[in-house]
Image (cartoon, rainbow, N blue to C red; front, side, top):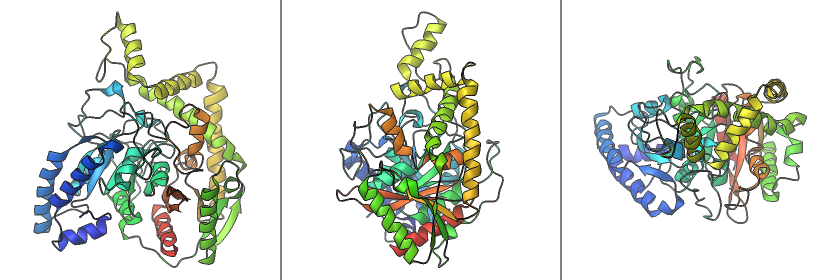
Length: 473
């Protein structure tokens, strides 16, 4: 039997209703049964079973950590020593990591079990998991539809009971958007709350590591374990880590903001809009105060996000040249040819497009026109967002404008694909914490997400509010 939440699983372990080995074996079997979903690029079956025996002994001895026996999958952008790391790309063929990411090491230190690495959009660039060199992942709710991206496989792994939790990365919604499409919980912390050491960089001033789980409580526990200062990451926050795992629903009433124009936009699916409006009405009936907000600068969020992330990607991905590690073309005539052909053959279409656009944005003739201007807009958006939080405790919205779309439908239209992130990029542009929680399903059984945006380092309060919402369902 698979226990979906860690609390029920831990109780079952302590009362001898199950064992860590039996649980790991169940997940391995489930992964094999559902291999058509294309979730795991590699399953560490023998390692996980061996670690299960060690953790079981610790539980018996009373020395087990906070995550004893929790089975976790990791997105293929996180380093795990002596294991392959490819970022969903051919350019890193054959590469094995020489160290373990800080966030992953902290899970291991608390006796979590890593079951495998999960498929993703190449270098986390995508909103549908269709850009992977290893093919698309399928949504467990409807295998003709995408799971979202770029942490799509990580969300499906939790959705389909292939592991207790997944660790993904969120640059513009890559944890929350797939969580919304798959009906699970996805948490993006405040920028710098979790160390980025060991995360393959896409856009360094946006990238965050975050958990995908079946419950808000599990997300809180994983956040607590992974957060904190790190000598290897100079950008990580030095603020003390709160006891997120003690979070519980309260009777406190909050002031909740929402962007009226966004909810009434023509681009929002009718059922997503209806579910969101119903949720707002439920919150109002529960005694919370609703405040409609006007945010004219919302139309600048996506352009600002894509200009800056493409520029940073151009710089970050320059290291993949075929000289030091990964794929190297066998057809090079000279050194320059080696660079060009390696990168041309190793990177996929979407990554090459973003690198080229980023290089254009950073070029001398266009730097001020695009990059400098986007940085200014980012500051203005942050300032305006801070002014909203002088009046409200949280800002809520749908996680995505539509439910999961069909595979292949938006892959030929970049603008349509970019719009899938319209509600999630805000949190990354301003560096604030955000969470997506399930908000029912549409008439076709497709999950709908509800997103909460919180204040800087206000994760505990945000998690408490998320539990309040869950309580009134």
